[in-house]
Length: 290
Image (cartoon, rainbow, N blue to C red; front, top):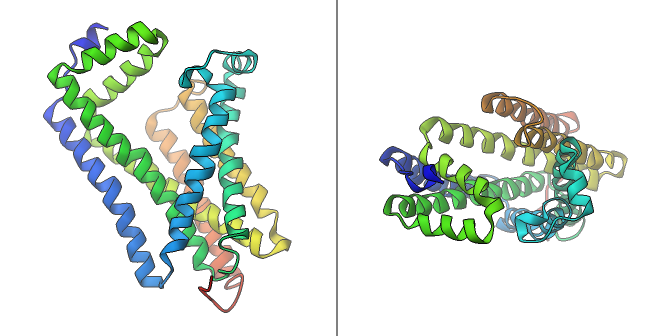
C-alpha cells in the first residue's frame, strides 16, 4: 500500500508509453494498408480476420475461460473446478493455452469455410493473418498503453489513491494485481518497449503462419491435419507463456521471448514454404471474387 500511495511515474516512462501507444496503433494500420495496395487484396479479408479474432477470442473464448478457470477476475466466486485448477498450476497453464488454441484456430477454419469460401487465392490467408495479428497488437499494446498513460497521470496527480481505496474496500484480493500494474507503469523503460514490440512482432508472424496452415487445411481436404496441428502449436506456445506467468518455470523475459520467436518464425516460414514454394499455391489461378 505504501508503495502504491507514494508511487510516481517519471517523464521518460510516460514518453515511452506515448511512443508505444502511437506505434502500436499506426504500424498495424500501415502494414495492412501497404499489403492491400501492393497485393490488391480486398480490405474485407483483413477486416474479417480482425472480426473473427474479436468474436472467437474475446467474445466467446475469454468469458468461458474466465468462468471456468478465473471466476474471481470477473467478480464471480470460486467454484470446485477453479479451485482444482488453481491448486494444479501446470493444468491451469494448459487450460490457459488450450482455450486460445482451440477457439482462435477454429475461428480461422470457420471463416475460411464460410465468409471467405470463394476467395481461393493464397494471399487471402496472409490477409486474414494480418487482420488477426495486427488487431491483436492494437488491443494488447495500443489500448493498454493508452490506459497506462491515463493511470500515470492519475498516479502523478494523486487521483489513483482513490482507486486503490476502492479496490482495498471492495476487492482486497485484487490489490496484488493493482500493485503489479503500478510497478509496470512506474518502471516502464525503453527495454520494456522494445521487448513488447519484439514479442508482438513474432506473434503476428505466428498468426500469419497459422492462418496459412488453416487456409491450406480448408482448401485441400488431404491436408486437413494442418488444422489440428495449428491448434497444437498455438496451445504449446501459450502453454509455455502461461507456465512463465504462473511461476511454474523460471525464465527471464528475454528467454521467454526467444521461445516465442522460435515458434513464431518456425510456423511462419514453414507455412510460407508450404504455400509459396512447395506446390506454388493451393489454387493456381488467384481470384479475389466473393
